[in-house]
Structure formats: structure tokens, C-alpha cells
Image (tube, rainbow, N blue to C red; front, side, top):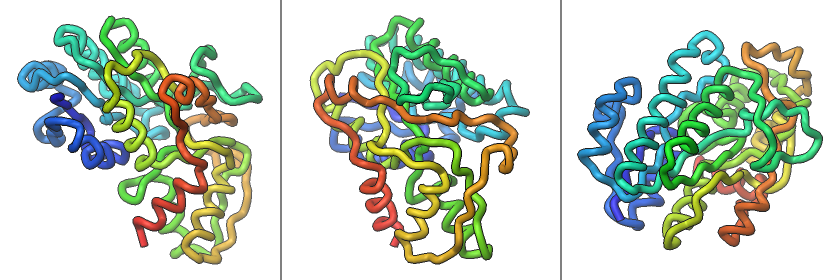
Length: 281
């Protein structure tokens, strides 16, 4: 099996590069070799590699900046994804793509199912939904995994930001009215690698997030407790934080379809956090 992995320098991509290596011949070009803003170059790279599987871990993920950079967000998260899907269709390849809980508005009280109607409240969410729709419209074989609150031991993410801030400030102020399931890139990569080892995994859209739930405030406290830092964490509202982009108040995803089809679920977010903190220390 020949696998083309995009976005290997990102959180999920870097974990996937390690996990997918045993699954077959892995081709993982860097940014200099694979420019997502150059759609013609992207098309040529796929045609040159002729993969059996395309795993797209590349994305524009700057949620707040996307409010002022709509064209850039849509270029990477929608237009480029559409090109990958079209090329996958021509090759008969399987496309694995990652989406987000931010395609929902967060107004539902219960966890979101795959069949719930999306209603993004940010440019980032709109661009990711456009990418999902481009994949589905292409007619290619695909696996779209919506995940949530992704973090890892490296890169820029909430966990790294909290650890850095806790060592520099007397107290932290963290939003406590948004619910979700922090999901480690490590757990996502392990699950995706397991799925790709199966013969002809069923195409479709699947939610893939950690079990359990918390708030950003609860996640921050758990991070600091995990490394023995005593910095106080003050709970604030989304309005007090005043981010440029709106976030869903409820980011919880129902993962029962993933469990039903593939026979497993991601571990509880506490277990994922413990594994990542162990990798840092």
C-alpha cells in the first residue's frame, strides 16, 4: 500500500508519520515540496506519487486569524481538499481527511451526531465544512474524521500554551462555559493507523474524539495538576475572553458510529492527557 501523507509537520501529521510507516510505503513531503496554495502543484504531486491512500493532515487551523484571512483558510481547508478528492477519485484511491467540531454552532444540549445539521459560527468552521462537502461531492472513496480540541506534546496548541503561561504568570484566566473532549493527536493517529490496516474500511463521515468531557478551564487545571504546577486557574466566560472568532459552547461529539463500524473508541481524555504529559517529561 502506497500512502501519501500531507501536513506531516502538524500535530496529527507528525504522529501519523510515525504510525503509518509500518502500514506500507509512506511518502510524506514537507511544505517546500507540497504547497497547498498552489493547486496545480498539488495536483501534479498526487499524480506523480499515484498513492493508494491519501491522508490529508494539512489544514489552516488559526481560528481567530481566519476571521481576517478568509481566502487563505478556504484555499487550504476547502479548495486544496477538493483537488485531493478529485485526484483520489481518478486514481481510485482512498482519501482520509480530518474535520472539526467547529462545523457546529454548539447550541445543541447533547453530543453531536454525524447526521446533525452543521452550522458553523466562524470562518474556520465554514472553511472546514466546505472541505467536507468537496470531498463528499467528488465521488471518491473517503473517510472523514471530525475530531475536537486537538493537542499534542509538540507544536502550538492549548496544552503547550497553558504550560508556558503557567510558568510566566501569577494566575491564568480560562474559559469555563465551553464543553468538549480534549483529544490527543497521538490517540487520533493510533486509531487512524488501525483503521487503515483493515481491508476496505467503509467510506463515510465519522466522529473521532476522546471519551468524557470537560471545559477549557477544567482541561487547564488537569494539565497543571499533571505536571505539579500550582498556578491558580480562574474561570471566566467566553464573553470575558473576547476572542475574534466565536467558538461552539458545546463541542461534544457522539462517537457511537465509529465504535459500531470499527469496533473501538478513543480512550477517556484523562488517559490521553497522561500519555502526552509523560512524553513531555
